[in-house]
Structure formats: structure tokens, C-alpha cells
Amino acid sequence: MALPKLPPELIGAIAAELESESDMCALDRTNRYLHSILNGLLYRRNAEYYQSSALIWAAKNSKTATAEMSLRHSADVDTKCMRDSMRGTPLVYAAQGGHEAIVRLLIERGASINTTSERERGAPLHLAARGGHAAVVRLLLDKDASLDANGNLGGPPLCEATRGGYEDIARMLLQSGADPHAACPWGWTPLFHASDNGDVAMIKLFLELGADPQCEDWSGSTPLSAAARNGHIDSIELLSSYGGVFNAPDRSGQTPLSLAAEAGHEALVKLLLEKGVTPHSQDRMGQTPPGKAASSGKQGAVEAFIDHGLDPNSTDRDGRTMLSLAAELGHAAIVQLLIHKGADKDAVDRRGMSPLMYAAQSGKNAVIRLLLQKGVDVEGMDHRGWTPLMFAARSGSHSAVMLRGCYGLYPEHLEGAAEMKALNKTALEELHESARLLLAHGAKVDAADGEGRTALYWAVQSTVGFVRIFLEHGANPNVKSKIGETILARIAFSPYGSPKFDDTAQLLLESGADVDIRDGTGRTPLSWAAQPGARDIDTKVMLLFLEHGANPFSVDRYGKTPLAWAASVGHEAYFIDALKRFKASRQTSDSGSG
Image (tube, rainbow, N blue to C red; front, side, top):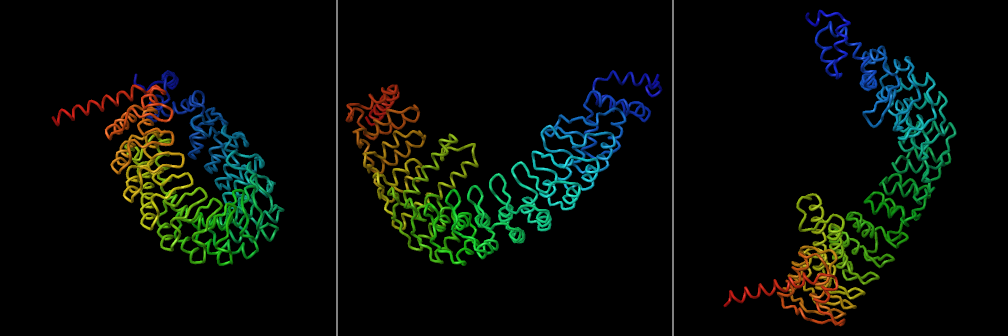
């Protein structure tokens, strides 16, 4: 007998034997007769074995007919979807999507109004308010949905509506009894959200309902601070008319003026200054509003402070001027403006650092060129005796060290890490150019700091190209620090172990470095190379020193030879291997010449 001619009971029995829902669906779609028999069975099976997933799908996609069929065939109206991170009920998803007809249907079938998703993203009313779905909000309110519960992505429904700028929903919630003072978990009331958005109408609404314009969130910030951060002048004036304080600091010490300055809201900065707010306040980091404007590159805000009469040489807690802060971060236009307005281009902070030093340290060459054109002191020293050239050299060293220590990479060996390679290469090239600029304008290549170290001392921890710049300008490779440290020994005993340090050593030796130079303890570079570990690196460096005539039997003040130092850390085999390789290369060379 043909399948379409079988009685419904038998067709149902056959379908019940099918293991998968997809197989039953395929059978259902064979023809209209089978569909009329199997469709209800499919929905019942979905409800029984698949957690009413058809109802979840209908709620998410606003498919009213599917939802009705699911409910008609025993779907659980409060089933929870376990296939996504939200794990909500059908009503949760329908409210989130603003599907009014589905929401009404689910409510009529007894869905729990205040249920929340397992991940606590909020109840249906939260989600409808957050999405701006006014009709759904009205439906839920008519069924006495809770107005007070918090969702983890925000506060009560009123906060959600205010944050989204949905004034109609906010008024609807207030008319239903929502508390206008209820706060989010982080302390923001509806007034905060309205102030953050610059929504004057809603700010006025909450103020008229008695909201406190000086209320604080968990960070001590006020609604006026929220408005200042986004440059909402009208909102600030309204808040102040109800008692908001212009210069109230938060717990980090930031005032509305510092927030406006950092964000570059020039008109607001002018307004606050005209209202008498002091530009000299300091946050917990000691930073001032003008300093924040300069460091964030907000030229208009900087001009507003200067035009108001601020001394361009005013400082923060660390003694740093706006010029110093702008120079460090490469804001050349602000540097130009401040110098034009009378800023001291050589002013030093409490560490003795000048704007040129900060620019050199960060490789901001546009600023370096500008400062050099203005005749800054290229040989100035900070309290440690470091010059701008030393800062450039140290930063080149730190840039390379960062990659070795944090990423296990090297400036010359970054294959497979193209983005990091490009980033580091650019940073190093900028610092190379910084050094060239300083040297071209008279920086002394062998100037020594308070410890007797020169720029070359730091440069050798960077790239060969960086070292070459200093050597080409006459750097002395045999200079010693006050405690007798030598450049070659610094390479030989480097804890970073760059595979290119042997190239740097080769360059230094070719430039006149003494292979047997002794440090304060009488140790030679070979002695230091013999002591630490990685075989491939140390053997190369030791072999290089031997090939340039290093004495393998030199004795230091401790009475130790290079071999003795190698043995002290269990590396004598490496040293002996280097000697054997050196001897073999000499024999090969001698036989070839003979």
C-alpha cells in the first residue's frame, strides 16, 4: 500500500520510529497529507525531547504562527534556551527583539513576567527598555512587571531607558511608579545617564522630580562630571542651576574641568574658566587640567587656558610644564604654540628632565627638530647626568629588550610576526633618527653620566645599526664607567643573549675596541663571555674574541682565568669547544697559506 494511503495512526507509528527530528521533518514535507498528520507530532516531539526549541526560535524571529503551534502542542512557555550564552526564556528573547505579538501571546499563555536569563542580562522589562521597545514595555507594565530589579548590564529598567535616550519609555516607567533615584550597580542614577547623553529634557525631568545634582557614583563622579566628559554645555549649565558644583573632584581627583580638557572640549573649558574654576587643581597623579589637555594633544583646550591668562610655564606636581608633556607625546603643533606664547623651552622638571629629553626618549622627531630649531640646550643633563642623546640610546635599548623579554623576539629576527616586526622597526628607526638629529646639532657622543657611562653603553643593547650611528660619530668603544665597566664586557655578559650581539662585538672590534680591555675587576671580555650560558651564542662570541687575539690565559684580580669562570657555572665544555674551534680554524688557515 502506498504511504499516502496509510491511515493516520499507522503513519504516526512509522514517524515515531524515526530517530532524528530532521528525518521526521523530511517525511512531513513529502506532501500535504503527511504534513497534516505529522506537523502536530513534530511540535509535540520538539516540546518533549528538544526543550521546546521551536518556541525559542519563534520568539527570537517573531514567528507568531510557529509560536502558537508550539504552545498548542505542549511547549513549555518558560523553557530556557541552552544553546547560547544568554539562556533566556521565550519571553526574554521576544522582549529583547521588540516582538509585540509574541510577547502578548506568551503573556496570555502564562509566561513568567519577571524571569531573567541565567546569565543575568535582565528581565523582559529591562531588555525591552534597553532596546527602546515602547509597546512591549507597556504590555509588561500592564502585567505588573517589576520596576526595581537590576540587570548585570545595567540598572533598573528606568536606567536602561534613560541610558538609551528613550524619553517616552522613561516617562511611562515613571508613571508606573519607577523610582527616579534608583541606581545602577556602579552608582549611576537615571540623572547620570541623562547627563552623560546630554539629554537636557530628561535631565530637567529628573531634577524636577528631586534628583540630587551632586549625587556620586562609586568613583565619586557626579552627573556634572559625566556631562563634562562629553562636552555637554547646556546640560552642565542646567545642572549647575540646580546646585551642581563646577569643581567637584571625584575620588581620583579629576574635576569637570580636567575631564573637559582631556577630551578637548574647548568651549566647555572656556565656560568653566569663566565660572571661576581653577586650572591648577591636581588629581591623585598630580596632573592638572592644562597638563591633561597638552598630553592628550588637545590644542584648542590648551589655547583656551593660555588665552584665559594661564602662565605657559605652570607646572604639575612633578614640575612638568605643558610643553614637556606635549613634547613627550609628539604634539608638535602644541609645542609650537606654547613656545610662541612664551613657554620656557629648556624648563626642567623635578627629575631635571627637559622637553628635549622627553622627546628624545620617545623618538618624537618632529618635536626634536622643532626644539632644535628653537635653540634648545642639546647638552643639558638631568639629575643623573643623562643627556638627550642618552635618552634616545636607552630607549633604543629598551625597545629591543621589550621584544626579547616579553615576546622572545629580536629586532632583526621577527619572521612570522610581521605586525610586531613592523611596529618595532618603526620605533627603532625613529630613535635612530633622533640620535642622528641630536648628533648633527652638536650632541657630544662621549658625554658621560654620573656613573661614567656614555650613550654607547646603552646603544649596544639595541641593534647593530644603532651602534654604528654612534661609532660613525666617533664614539669611544673603550670607554669605562666609574666602576670600570667596559662596552665589550657588557655585550659578553648580557643577560638577554641576542643572537646578533656577536655582530655588534665584531663592529666594535673593527672600530678599535680593545679585545683584552680589563674592567675594574681585571676581567676581560673573554672572561665574561665564558661565564653565562646559551651554547650557540656564547661560543660564537668567545670564538670572535679569540680570533681577534684575546688572551685565553689572562688572570683577573680574583686569580681566575676565563676557563675557571666557565667551570664555575658548569660551562667549561663550551669554552674548551671554542678553543678547539679556534685552533682548528688557525690550522686550516696556516695550511692554506703554506
